[in-house]
Image 1 (cartoon, rainbow, N blue to C red):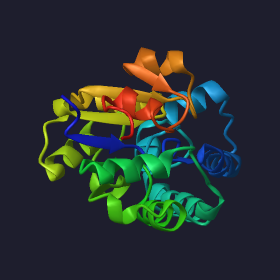
Image 2 (tube, helix red, strand yellow):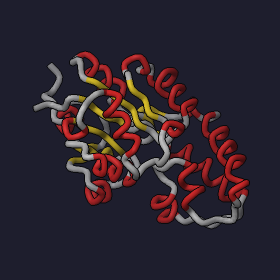
Image 3 (cartoon, one colour):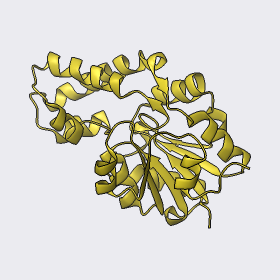
Image 4 (tube, one colour):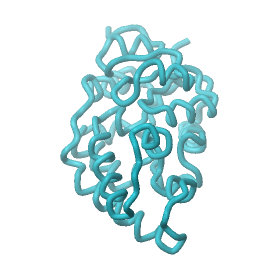
Length: 222
Protein backbone atom coordinates (compact mmCIF):
# COMPACT_ATOMS: atom_id res chain seq x y z
CA UNK A 1 0.00 0.00 0.00
CA UNK A 2 1.18 3.51 -0.77
CA UNK A 3 1.37 5.94 2.18
CA UNK A 4 -1.83 7.62 3.32
CA UNK A 5 0.08 10.83 4.06
CA UNK A 6 3.58 12.28 3.85
CA UNK A 7 5.15 14.10 6.79
CA UNK A 8 7.95 16.54 6.02
CA UNK A 9 10.46 18.41 8.11
CA UNK A 10 11.26 21.94 6.91
CA UNK A 11 14.83 23.09 7.61
CA UNK A 12 17.36 20.83 5.91
CA UNK A 13 14.58 18.84 4.26
CA UNK A 14 12.70 21.30 2.07
CA UNK A 15 15.23 24.14 2.28
CA UNK A 16 18.96 24.33 2.94
CA UNK A 17 19.07 26.54 5.99
CA UNK A 18 21.43 24.81 8.41
CA UNK A 19 24.14 27.39 7.66
CA UNK A 20 21.75 30.09 8.86
CA UNK A 21 20.82 28.28 12.07
CA UNK A 22 24.47 27.47 12.70
CA UNK A 23 25.37 31.15 12.31
CA UNK A 24 22.58 32.26 14.64
CA UNK A 25 23.59 29.71 17.28
CA UNK A 26 27.25 30.79 16.96
CA UNK A 27 26.20 34.36 17.64
CA UNK A 28 24.44 33.06 20.77
CA UNK A 29 27.55 31.08 21.80
CA UNK A 30 29.75 34.14 21.36
CA UNK A 31 27.41 36.30 23.44
CA UNK A 32 27.49 33.74 26.26
CA UNK A 33 31.22 32.97 25.77
CA UNK A 34 30.57 29.29 25.13
CA UNK A 35 32.85 26.85 23.34
CA UNK A 36 30.72 24.34 21.41
CA UNK A 37 32.45 22.00 18.97
CA UNK A 38 30.74 20.51 15.92
CA UNK A 39 30.06 17.18 17.61
CA UNK A 40 28.33 18.85 20.58
CA UNK A 41 26.44 21.14 18.24
CA UNK A 42 25.11 18.20 16.18
CA UNK A 43 24.12 16.25 19.29
CA UNK A 44 22.57 19.00 21.40
CA UNK A 45 21.47 21.84 19.10
CA UNK A 46 20.94 20.73 15.51
CA UNK A 47 17.34 20.07 14.46
CA UNK A 48 15.92 20.86 17.90
CA UNK A 49 13.69 23.59 19.26
CA UNK A 50 15.65 26.41 20.85
CA UNK A 51 13.30 26.29 23.86
CA UNK A 52 14.16 22.63 24.50
CA UNK A 53 17.87 23.28 24.07
CA UNK A 54 17.95 26.12 26.58
CA UNK A 55 15.89 24.05 29.01
CA UNK A 56 17.92 20.84 28.73
CA UNK A 57 21.49 21.92 27.97
CA UNK A 58 23.48 23.18 30.92
CA UNK A 59 24.78 26.67 30.35
CA UNK A 60 25.52 29.97 32.07
CA UNK A 61 22.00 31.27 31.44
CA UNK A 62 19.40 31.37 34.20
CA UNK A 63 15.70 30.62 33.86
CA UNK A 64 14.90 34.32 33.76
CA UNK A 65 17.34 34.78 30.85
CA UNK A 66 15.58 32.26 28.61
CA UNK A 67 12.63 34.34 27.27
CA UNK A 68 14.94 37.12 26.11
CA UNK A 69 17.43 34.65 24.63
CA UNK A 70 14.67 32.85 22.72
CA UNK A 71 13.27 36.11 21.38
CA UNK A 72 16.71 37.11 20.12
CA UNK A 73 17.35 33.71 18.53
CA UNK A 74 14.01 33.78 16.72
CA UNK A 75 14.44 37.37 15.58
CA UNK A 76 17.91 36.71 14.15
CA UNK A 77 16.67 33.56 12.40
CA UNK A 78 13.50 35.12 10.95
CA UNK A 79 15.53 37.96 9.47
CA UNK A 80 17.46 35.40 7.39
CA UNK A 81 14.47 33.60 5.83
CA UNK A 82 15.20 35.04 2.39
CA UNK A 83 18.70 33.58 2.38
CA UNK A 84 17.77 29.90 2.29
CA UNK A 85 18.25 27.66 -0.74
CA UNK A 86 15.59 25.24 -1.94
CA UNK A 87 16.48 21.55 -1.73
CA UNK A 88 16.42 20.17 -5.29
CA UNK A 89 13.06 18.57 -5.99
CA UNK A 90 11.33 19.92 -2.87
CA UNK A 91 8.70 22.01 -4.65
CA UNK A 92 8.14 19.38 -7.33
CA UNK A 93 7.63 16.67 -4.69
CA UNK A 94 4.98 18.66 -2.83
CA UNK A 95 3.23 19.50 -6.10
CA UNK A 96 3.31 15.86 -7.23
CA UNK A 97 1.87 14.65 -3.93
CA UNK A 98 -0.87 17.26 -4.20
CA UNK A 99 -1.60 16.16 -7.77
CA UNK A 100 -1.98 12.60 -6.52
CA UNK A 101 -4.38 13.70 -3.81
CA UNK A 102 -2.05 12.71 -0.95
CA UNK A 103 -2.18 14.48 2.40
CA UNK A 104 0.97 16.41 3.37
CA UNK A 105 2.04 17.90 6.70
CA UNK A 106 5.09 19.87 7.75
CA UNK A 107 6.43 19.36 11.27
CA UNK A 108 9.24 21.71 12.22
CA UNK A 109 11.29 22.91 15.17
CA UNK A 110 11.17 26.41 13.69
CA UNK A 111 8.91 29.28 14.67
CA UNK A 112 5.56 29.98 13.05
CA UNK A 113 6.86 33.20 11.47
CA UNK A 114 9.88 31.50 9.87
CA UNK A 115 7.80 28.56 8.70
CA UNK A 116 5.16 30.66 6.97
CA UNK A 117 7.77 32.84 5.25
CA UNK A 118 9.63 29.80 3.94
CA UNK A 119 6.55 27.82 2.86
CA UNK A 120 4.71 30.77 1.32
CA UNK A 121 7.38 33.17 0.08
CA UNK A 122 10.39 30.93 -0.64
CA UNK A 123 8.79 27.64 -1.71
CA UNK A 124 5.36 28.90 -2.72
CA UNK A 125 3.68 25.67 -1.55
CA UNK A 126 1.93 26.81 1.61
CA UNK A 127 -1.51 26.31 0.07
CA UNK A 128 -0.64 22.69 -0.74
CA UNK A 129 0.06 21.77 2.89
CA UNK A 130 -3.08 21.52 5.04
CA UNK A 131 -1.32 20.78 8.34
CA UNK A 132 1.70 22.63 9.71
CA UNK A 133 3.03 22.03 13.24
CA UNK A 134 5.56 24.58 14.47
CA UNK A 135 7.64 25.01 17.62
CA UNK A 136 4.90 26.95 19.39
CA UNK A 137 2.39 24.10 19.11
CA UNK A 138 4.18 21.37 21.08
CA UNK A 139 5.22 20.97 24.69
CA UNK A 140 8.36 19.03 23.76
CA UNK A 141 10.19 19.17 20.45
CA UNK A 142 12.20 16.62 18.48
CA UNK A 143 13.49 13.98 19.18
CA UNK A 144 10.22 13.67 21.11
CA UNK A 145 7.44 12.42 18.77
CA UNK A 146 4.79 14.92 19.91
CA UNK A 147 4.92 17.09 16.79
CA UNK A 148 4.53 14.17 14.38
CA UNK A 149 1.78 12.57 16.45
CA UNK A 150 -0.08 15.88 16.52
CA UNK A 151 0.22 16.18 12.74
CA UNK A 152 -1.15 12.66 12.25
CA UNK A 153 -4.12 13.37 14.50
CA UNK A 154 -4.91 16.53 12.58
CA UNK A 155 -4.65 14.67 9.28
CA UNK A 156 -6.79 11.83 10.66
CA UNK A 157 -4.25 9.13 9.80
CA UNK A 158 -2.40 6.38 11.65
CA UNK A 159 1.36 7.11 11.83
CA UNK A 160 2.06 3.56 10.71
CA UNK A 161 0.39 4.33 7.37
CA UNK A 162 2.54 7.42 6.75
CA UNK A 163 5.89 8.08 5.12
CA UNK A 164 8.18 10.90 6.18
CA UNK A 165 11.42 12.71 5.38
CA UNK A 166 13.91 14.16 7.87
CA UNK A 167 17.48 15.42 7.62
CA UNK A 168 18.66 15.29 11.23
CA UNK A 169 19.27 12.55 13.76
CA UNK A 170 16.80 14.14 16.20
CA UNK A 171 14.16 14.33 13.50
CA UNK A 172 14.56 10.70 12.46
CA UNK A 173 14.38 9.63 16.10
CA UNK A 174 11.13 11.58 16.47
CA UNK A 175 9.62 9.76 13.49
CA UNK A 176 10.66 6.36 14.79
CA UNK A 177 9.25 7.15 18.23
CA UNK A 178 5.98 8.25 16.61
CA UNK A 179 5.69 4.88 14.87
CA UNK A 180 5.80 6.30 11.33
CA UNK A 181 5.79 3.43 8.86
CA UNK A 182 8.36 4.64 6.31
CA UNK A 183 11.20 6.90 7.44
CA UNK A 184 13.46 8.43 4.80
CA UNK A 185 16.58 10.42 5.59
CA UNK A 186 17.76 13.15 3.23
CA UNK A 187 21.52 13.62 3.48
CA UNK A 188 21.61 17.42 3.30
CA UNK A 189 22.71 17.81 6.92
CA UNK A 190 23.83 14.43 8.31
CA UNK A 191 25.52 11.50 6.53
CA UNK A 192 23.51 8.48 5.46
CA UNK A 193 25.10 6.20 8.06
CA UNK A 194 24.08 8.53 10.89
CA UNK A 195 20.50 8.79 9.65
CA UNK A 196 20.23 5.02 9.21
CA UNK A 197 21.66 4.50 12.69
CA UNK A 198 18.95 6.80 14.04
CA UNK A 199 16.28 4.68 12.35
CA UNK A 200 15.88 5.78 8.72
CA UNK A 201 14.96 2.87 6.48
CA UNK A 202 16.30 4.57 3.35
CA UNK A 203 18.27 7.69 2.44
CA UNK A 204 18.26 10.04 -0.55
CA UNK A 205 20.59 12.85 -1.56
CA UNK A 206 17.74 15.28 -2.28
CA UNK A 207 14.02 15.25 -3.09
CA UNK A 208 14.14 14.92 -6.85
CA UNK A 209 11.71 12.44 -8.34
CA UNK A 210 11.50 9.56 -9.00
CA UNK A 211 14.07 8.60 -6.33
CA UNK A 212 12.28 10.45 -3.53
CA UNK A 213 8.87 9.06 -4.50
CA UNK A 214 10.28 5.54 -4.66
CA UNK A 215 11.94 5.86 -1.23
CA UNK A 216 8.61 7.07 0.21
CA UNK A 217 6.79 4.07 -1.24
CA UNK A 218 5.11 5.63 -4.28
CA UNK A 219 5.39 4.64 -7.92
CA UNK A 220 7.29 7.14 -10.05
CA UNK A 221 5.64 10.14 -11.75
CA UNK A 222 3.01 9.17 -14.27
